[in-house]
Length: 283
Image 1: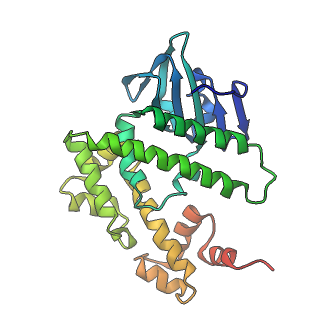
Image 2: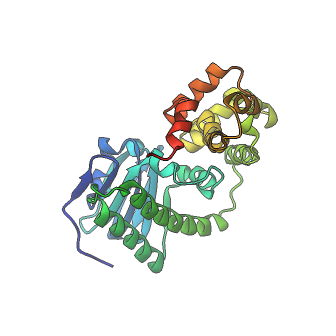
Image 3: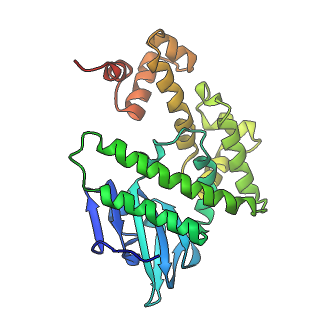
C-alpha cells in the first residue's frame, strides 16, 4: 500500500495540489477546491460542519471548500495522501444530472467513505497519476489531460459512495427536500424557471425554508444548483447556430436580451455573441 512520496507539499499554481500532510488539509490555499484525502495508515480525526469524524486506514474523505474543517488531530503513526483541485473545474467536468449532484448532498452530511483494500489501491493510483502529471503545464492540452484523470478519480469515488448509499436507510426530511429539488431540476424545468420561489412552491415549502435547508445540507445555494442545471441547456442552444439569440432568450424565458446577455456573461465569461465566436475554429 505504501509508495514513494513527494515532499510534503506539491503545487502548480493553485488549481491542482497534492500533499502527504494531514494538517494541511484545511490550508487557506484550499478554500476554492474540493479535496480528497485517503488515510493509508494509523488514525486521526477532524471536525467538519460541527461534527467530529474519526478516520483510519482506507478511509476516504471528500470535502468541497475545506475551510469548514477544524480541530485536526492525528496519532503519531498516521499517514495520508490527498489531492485537491479547483472546485468549479471539477464540477464542469460532469453533466448537470450526474450522480455527483445527489452524491454531494450526503457527502456534505458525512464526508467519510470507508474503502476496501482494492478500492483504496485504486484511489492511490488515481492520486499518483494526477500527482505525476501536475508538472506538465507546458502541454497544449494540459487541463484536458488533468480533467480526464480527475474524472477517472471521481468515478472511482462515485462507485464507492454508491455502495455506501445502498446501505443507508435514513429518511431525514431535510435530505428528502433537497433530493426532491434535485429530481425536479433534473426534469429540465430550469430552462424557463430559475426563481427559487417557483421550486419552493412546487415542494410546498417557503423560499426561506428551502434556501436555508439546501444551504445547510449541501453547503451551496438553491440558485447555484438551478444555474448548474440551466447552463448546459444554454450552451446547447448557443451551440446550435440555427437559433438566433432572440429565439434562445425566448425559449429560456429571459425577460429581455440585456438580461440574457448579463446571465451569459456571468456564467460563461462571455456575452452570447462572444461565446458563439469562441466556438468558431481559429484560422
